Length: 22
Image (cartoon, rainbow, N blue to C red):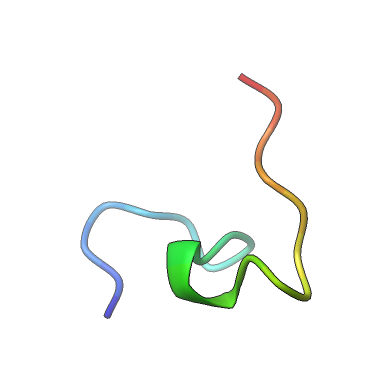
């Protein structure tokens, strides 16, 4: 389920990975 999101951050797997620094 990745559209324009980098492989380092997944909106669906934000539980294991923190949100990107924007």
